[in-house]
Length: 122
Length: 107
Image (cartoon, rainbow over all chains, first blue to last red; front, side):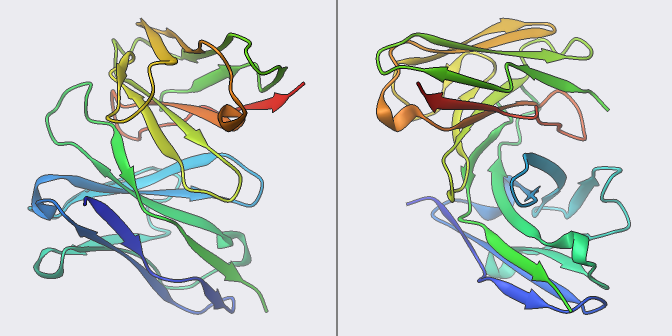
């Protein structure tokens, strides 16, 4: 079964660092992009960025560039989203999702992780 | 960035109704459009890619159409399990922007 399994919920204080994960299974991890999507409480979906684990090619939304770092370890089929200094405004649900790599209209997210809730509070 | 605008933001409908949601891109994106469904407390689910192609396992009551800047998602006969929020997303260029969502509620 193709699936993405994310790490568990986190509660952190402002200024702390955090790295959450997304592990892929059931497919060739290096042949698909993994994207990250933020959903703040009661709000819509925001595209943050994406990585191609095959060569670590990474793209960021300008809204998130410099605020987060996306990485991947293809040896363990896992992508990461990390913060060096969290803010209260980072409180949100974060989803990872798989995307095709065919440079075509079919390159949409098809499989989603279950989400990781990050709460930042003093 | 390409802006994606959905209308309406919310709608009330009855079981059995035909429902249409519209998504407009701020510039032409050919057929590089996807649709997603999200139920409360759940991860989004992928419904449609390339504007009109159903993802594997998605029932045929869902259909998508459009090209260029204007797109629609249609649910042919609304069922209780279809009450959810629906999002469009352009996959034409980075950053891959989403619409603001359309909440489909029970009348």
